[in-house]
Image 1 (tube, rainbow, N blue to C red):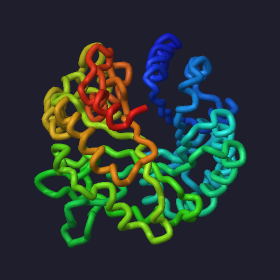
Image 2 (image 1 turned 135 degrees about the vertical axis):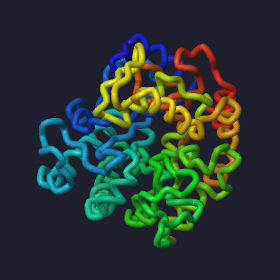
Image 3 (image 1 turned 135 degrees about the horizontal axis):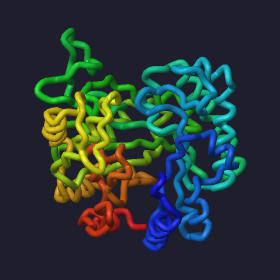
Image 4 (image 1 turned 180 degrees about the horizontal axis):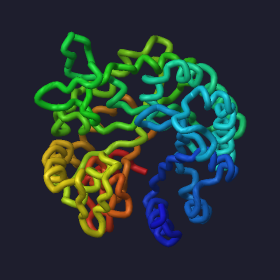
Length: 383
């Protein structure tokens, strides 16, 4: 991001190093990773090189799909508009992506290397391509990474809430379970306002010997049935093992993103940013002042503020979720837990300011307030 000057990065990463914490990084442009020989994005690489305590705690995640649609991520200018997995295969990009993953492992030697960020929609919408990834590509990446970085744990990454289906048995008009597009009155049951079928069985398509770990992003507050952390069921995470076949029962769970909002209200600027993201045809800038147009009207913005209130929280709820998350995962013994943001987002990161992620930091964006949940997190998962 443009505001990530070397000085800002150095201050932030030095603090993580001093606290004994790790850093989780998603590499969206896999082709750039390959071109850099597996190096981190600058200026991170330069700063990390001078923090020998932090470098062994860098967790890397290499992305090859759009998490929302499941379509492949091509290098700009290398594919026709709307290109899908047929063109990916035609260009031989599974091989190129594999080389990117191996180069990252060789250069960085991370303790954990995620292959694919939130590939749930990829598995749901493109089963043939997914089956090839699970049966052929991922095992090859595991084998190749083991040759250059034997201690690196390689895992695929999914989105937990969209993977496990509807928890409350909502059915569509014809009785079909988890009806996509059906909104159970009086509230929506997922981030997208849709219910989803359970697709967790897709994990069984990996050869069991290579699927030693699987990663999940998880945000239980996306589900409006869970307005508070104590409403999350006891088997929220453990129920995954009911869907796994016998050969996969020993898989270890990793949590690569999690969090809970620490504010109860969106500002008008944040609601305007969300409206702009929802309606790309809109031209509202929302910063430094809200500029409305025919799409992002004042009424629409106020509606966003009201609708998203159930997806927010406060500092007490955030602390309660830290406690609840520890309870729900205690018997699962996760080898990796990541809180998504140390600091809240601000206007320089409009995507996170949409309200759903903007205030899940352990600190305010300027660092002047540290929330009680941070100390409790460090007690539960000490560095």
